[in-house]
Length: 273
View 1 (cartoon, rainbow, N blue to C red):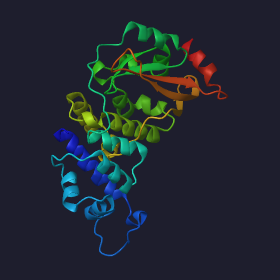
View 2: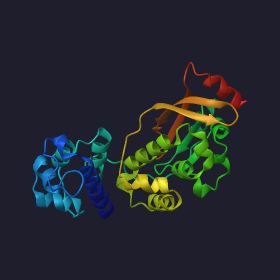
View 3: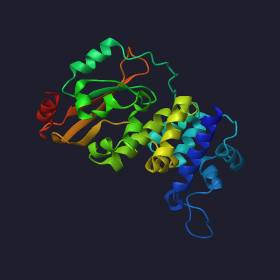
View 4: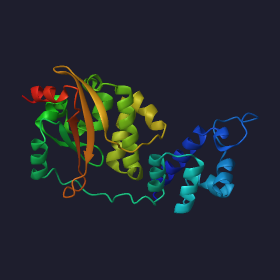
């Protein structure tokens, strides 16, 4: 593990430990507890490891925890599937994908995005920079074509562009979901200069991002319905999908399809026209 991964692992474990009520794991509550959640020695006891070893883990020391120990800690801390996966990736057991240099959106991928119209589609890199889109997405979010290339990042747009705040039907929930999914994806690469620069800029620009980032919350992506409030065609109910083209390493496609029975398909056709 790199020093950055060890530090993130330490902070993540500490944040989950402090959020877990003693009664949840069958321990007595009350007494002289001065801090929230479980004590380190309690986590160690429940997971079947030594107090000293677990303390070293939360201190970010250079130790090599086994997969079995990580699984035991995940069970002890009642981690969600996404949090368990994140823990494994941070500790080197999750098969984190190797870094792949972005070589640009290939022409055939742009043709695919164009062919999916009137569904809005855009392409992002591993650090969520927006590197391609179709006309339907530009009609949904015109700012994607006018923002500076250095700012053309999904997370940056969500947390700093007032137009995106107005566009998202439930900005507080949607923005937090984006943040937790982003962290889950980039956790093992938090030392990458591109990620460091983006996170630093967002912490300075957005109190909401700074607060959410400090929580260390993570979640995995799931296809779900999203509501948009477009200034021209009104409410759009779209299902959010994410695809990884096998022949375009380092790129993911985000596709929004109309939910049946909501009138969204007709509105997308109007918007595209």
